[in-house]
Length: 439
Image (cartoon, rainbow, N blue to C red; front, side, top):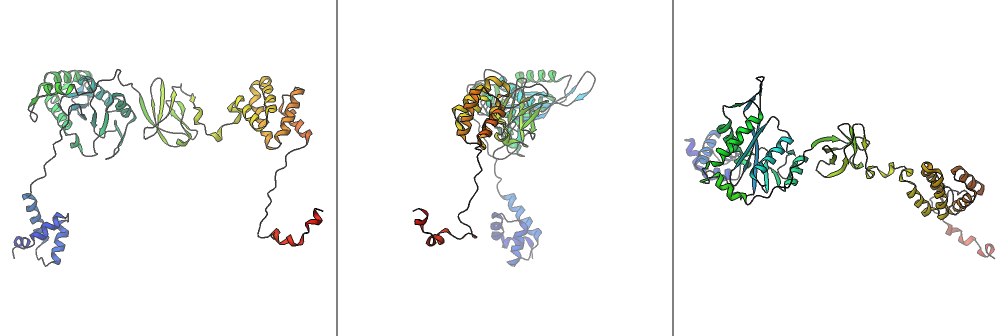
């Protein structure tokens, strides 16, 4: 029996199962239950012929509006041979406007966040405007955590987008054709501008590239749009957002772990963060004047002035309340608490202590507050007024006056009215004659 004719008899069943997403092996097993006597190879050949005859699914052509998008990607630049004869590899950054296809490119030795940010900034300056969105690859200089739905940007990249009023959109991981325009541009620049060339320095290579952009790339005829690139750019230029008044301020970012004392170390100095971030990783963004601490989801936690090596900067709100020693709150706060919990006489005595004891006053006032745990407020108030008349400003003298009064508060004993070992009081009611107790 011909194997092909055997599959033809079950053509409808095979095609229906294939349309449901079943594999060739599963289809072959199901056909065996239906009486199919052919081989698995014949089923594979039948499916292959069917796929070859089915029309291919076309790619979707994405139309971008003027000023809507700029795509950015890296490629390899031309080699640099310095005066010593050493060859150094360069990285080629290409930026292309998705509507007009105008290009900006430059090379650098490194592919770090600073080079990446400055390259995109130079592109905006070259185009004399800013696009609404910027599509980038998931490189480490721009993206901390890739994600199909909500990627996390590098802090510097995030601040750069805020400064220029644009939105940076990383493409989906491992799907480079989502930025197909710049993928083609990288190959175009490498093949038409840099192929077969060697330069003595990065500056020389960039000077050549910028001249090539003005004389060659901007005047090329785009085959798909059937127009010159420079003409399309003149149409797009009016749709670009205006440039900000200043360039993006340079700073460095580092991932740091918060120490057990609630501080992070940045270039030898220490800066506090809120206590709930202890032992967690945070971003430390710093320049010559400030240190900004941010969480991993780029929420600002603290802003400090830059400190010298070995110095510490601690914000008042970053010390947990349980770790704040009461004298640290100051004499004014302590006097308010004394008046609230004891009375005006105690505050008056405390004010005399502040005037006479100066730096030691907060600890003495703390001791006065502590006496409230063992003595009644009225007693402390009386003794404080007595101490004022005698000119006493010493805590020990105040404590001695309280001991002379001899009314130290006794701690209340916890009594229970009900317990499994205690008989209820109501059972004794019939035995008690209240007239005998209260005649």
